[in-house]
Image 1 (cartoon, rainbow, N blue to C red):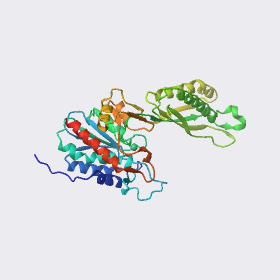
Image 2 (image 1 turned 60 degrees about the horizontal axis):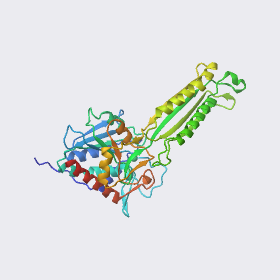
Image 3 (image 1 turned 120 degrees about the horizontal axis):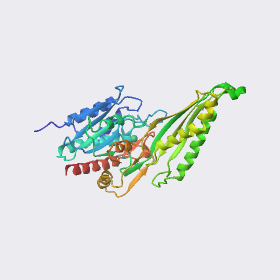
Length: 389
Ligand SMILES: [Zn+2]
């Protein structure tokens, strides 16, 4: 049976198309998704949208090769960080080539990888793959790996669950098998207002908030001593209180105080453990005292966002595959978060390997070296060889 071949774009032409859609996380990505969907359809590849609750954004999942089998997923996020406040030498949403570099928002993080994956589709299609290759394109990664979660939730039910996942974040095509996980909490302390001259009638929310901050400082000091992993910079989990606000006026005992703290957790550190320690401290060292004056006093500790840390197993099949495909023999750990930990926690072992340098991600005049796109194309060609064997 002969099928009409769709238009074949080069990876760079595809990248130019992808960059032309302003998919800043605060905007919708449906134009880009429609483009990718059409491209795949022209190559006779069916895809499925996983639409966000408000209908403004969508992930896309597609399978090339035999159905009913688990294969290798190529995962990439379609959203990009804002260009607001940055000074660019040219329009960030028009790909510009100069001196072997391709400039544009998302060129490195991470539309370059998506372009290379799409450019490989005709080659994947032309072969008799015995192991399927899945495409898993998400949204809202830049605001806390939000969009990939509903897609992951459907793996194994509405979507074929991959046996392994390659997350194409920019690693300069090196093999990353571990990263830290950013976790954020918001703490609300509720006291009781009183005239500051009658302080004994009130409960000072700022005072109790600082007590909690003091405990966090002790936890931070302990984290620095613990599980030193020299593959990371810095080699320990970090904890920082990053925002605090409270109080009403100089002569009122403050009724409320809110602060936010952030942990960059090494693989193996449990955010639950940190949270229950702070909760226990609140229950023992703050609340009884507070409630003896104001029964309504309260401390609420809420996890706002968590991207799990990622650490591949020593025996990981997908890490071995990525090393083989890149021809390397060394793996790396990085301090930024990716979707790899989420896939891995859902039972799909992952690795991070993609074109471009993280140093250029999120910057003005973001660029990717053309040679990185070429290297990624070679990697995907060898992936096709492997999947057809
Ligand atoms: Zn990224």
